[in-house]
Image: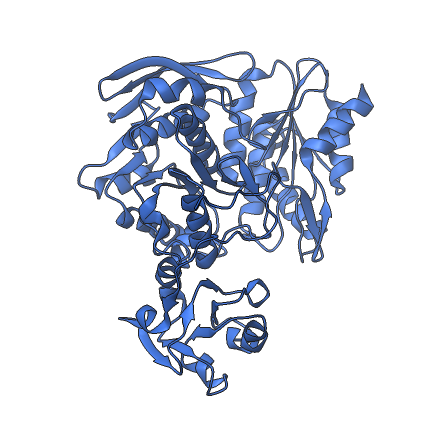
Length: 507
């Protein structure tokens, strides 16, 4: 029987495979824990009580403020047939509820989820990309190469989750382990052959990708980020490095100290460099064109050809070269992948917005110090006159990077418009103040003009009004995002739409 066709439009809920072979609770317990109560059959799994479907195993995890077992009654009412939890969770449940009790839930959630859905990654080629910057761009470029090779691709990432050409617009940003496994099971069922997947340090540290085998794993770079979650850079690096314990085919960009360190601990890594280092894959004769695209020569195993990248910024050469190296490791010939990679684009990643204005206008997701620096450096050679940036910092995230972001913007741009990003639960003015402190700490002779415009629409309008022929306007930080979170409410907001509207209004 053929799999059920997916919706023609975006999928707005977590997809589940149409065909599911039941798993006995006792089989899932082997080597992990003990079954209390009936040895029932389960056909799905989730850790969210409002996502439960009939036949599910409900995973009740301990939380910072409450135990997930407190939601078990709602999950059982919705159709769950058993609960996966720890001793504390089991003590909160009625005695007649079937329970798979384990010492700790999270460390086994990924592998249990994989077993419930029939170990779907074994039927797919999984290509994982980790690093601070470049994951999204690299996976989109990989997807373009896979499609050019006639492969049926899946993509799981920050900007989009795609099952072939069908978009999953469910509520998650980073899937939990059960959703990862369900997605992979649906992809396998729909005939997907290869999956390009962003792998965050959170996903690795929290076990969200446990139970997934990676055919190829790639590393882009490492810079300051997520230090609200990791204790320091060493902890951040260790989380990223753990991906490479899950693959036999590592591909590592060695253009920063972290990449060099990662590769040095491996037996035979495939290495990538655009900075002149001795590597398996190298780029030379890099040329930036007036429209921001690049051309370069690829040198690889028995390969030398001229190709390029349409996304502005010389640093995207590394992403394009990494994509080609990963695809080669996956069996896609470079001469097939390169033309597709050279013309691919990524939503909200150095995305040009053209409404007929006499200057370059770009929206980019750069919301980390290194990414902002990279974006400004990429755009400076394309700018004859002023380089203008509209930039904010998100609330409830790493506070230490805010002054650094302000400093980088002030040094790299001629006009910095400090504004709000996603303040979330924090005071927006305090976030802007931290950025301004960093910007204004730059000596006056070394910094551009710095202004504060809290309202993001007004800030973008200010940038448009200030830009003229030969200038470049960069609206940074939110990229592809379609909302702005303020005091727990997400309001519709898309930098690309707002910028296009302001450009049209100014014309």
